[in-house]
Length: 489
Image (cartoon, rainbow, N blue to C red):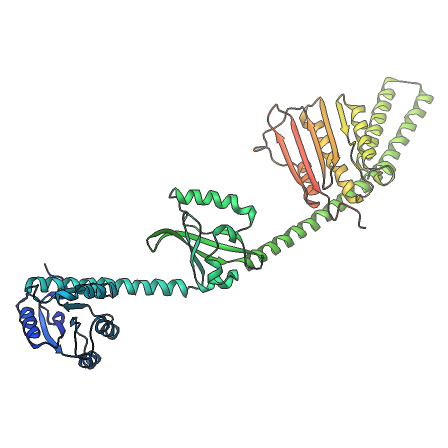
């Protein structure tokens, strides 16, 4: 069945141009054309290259039958000149037996077919015309598609580069990629994906490439850290898709430079963290002041009143004689005084400035050991504190105090180990116990753990808690030796 191009609709009638200067050959060819079953509208005829130029400037035939031997042009040049004038019109070359090599060369240069004079009939002629038109139409569609692809590729506002799936060699880039990375096209084409990425991201790139080779393509874009020609870090949001590039399995990456966005987000995050630190610092200062005020009130007021009450009980015993009720009252008052003294000592700011952090920690552990039977071991053999800020020492003290109180209240532990150490770049604190432990996923953060975390974050520290039911608890904290911890020099 003929395609729509050969149907009888008058809009689809074929107009065929015959370029032939031999009257006998022209007569035979015209007769064969009319004998075909093609729907032909007009057969246009020219006998020279000059006449053909004039006609093609006025009309656009559907097909050209071209004899290579003209009076004013001959050989391959005849085809090249006319094909340049009418690049979208299919051309069938007419040649003699001795010129078949030249005819083949015209096909290599863009002709759709060739026919040897005297060696074809109307059926072969019709078939050649039909398939030449179809072939040219397909080639034209491919050309338009390539031009559209080329326009989308080279004029795209996003950076685009194509790379070989096997070698990771960059095969093509557009102008935006050259601008974003600072490399010329020639510089790009001697580079691979490895060259665009910092060393620390190579392992992640390798895993991603393995997924690609297994056919696992994530259509969603993701952000990668890249380097430009100057060695500066840029952040590119990239989506990658498989593509056939000149018959080769390749990948096309479309990249959007989001460096400004990432920089702004990081700046906002830094400001948020800084504001949180300021709030945390203010809260801690307020807590310390409240501790001091409560401690002073207990010591100067409540304890004094209890002491006076104790004196009245002693006076009553002298006047009325000793009684069980007075003895019991005296014991209650003495216990209250001791409790308040112990509470006052825990609330008051430790004398770190006078005796140092290590001595202050040893003091609270001695107090715990005096009231509860528990094996407590504290190690700080290689800890040097003379160049450390007081606020940081106080936070370490409060962290240990808070966790020890948590252990006393909840852990039911027999043994507690505390280790404070220092390396060239970090300060580490570990607090472990052999108590009942807890499920970290289900345990809600109490005020004690919240206070500990707040103090850790205030000095850019990291905290890790290892625990499980009946497995004890180990708290590991690490601080970087940086500004805010070390004394300014």
